[in-house]
Length: 287
Image (cartoon, rainbow, N blue to C red):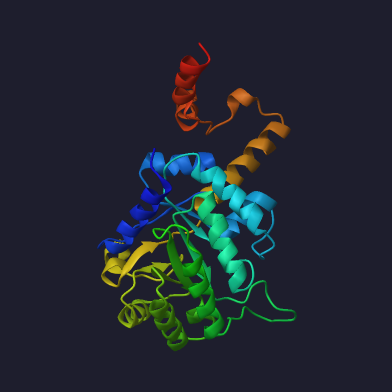
């Protein structure tokens, strides 16, 4: 069994390496086991996917920290895949960030992002806004101070490129670097010139959100300091589509035996770790 500290050290090894990896987007124990079994180096549990999975609600920051942590614990105890999570704004001010770090560490995360977006959206605000750089810095300092395991990775996230401009993003990146963040997460990066500029501004490894920009693939991103690049959250979306089509077909009279894309019995045994449970029954129940 891989310890939580070992999982966190595995993420640190990725960040300290020379390659760029794509995390597997996961949302529950089975999806995390699939990602682990097919070879992903780490998993990613996004705030938007947490809202979809737990509440069936859009990504408007109405999920609570408790609900988020509970789903994370279900994911992390199902296997040994290191998990990076999107902790949004830390569910409040800097003191709330400290509580968030403690709860998510206890739930088993290897790494978490804390962002400087003003969340939830302010009353009558026509578009997303940023916290002041000073408040964002306070949150990162609070997150670092709250760690119980020094191996836990704290990633400072900013949407400044999309909301304000590149210069502001670079300013914030330098502040978060000086504070001691382990990595920087940028959303809204659209071209290699932006990527080169933020890489030049800080020695920290970079994480980027899903982007339509052409950065030369994983090797091109790696050359600009990117160590983790999200691809989006297609697995959950595919699961929604498959569930919809299956239920609709059954409702319309399709025979269960005629349904397509059903997992084999062997795959279900693998993903539910049936052999391990059978061994435990033999050892401890006299079976």
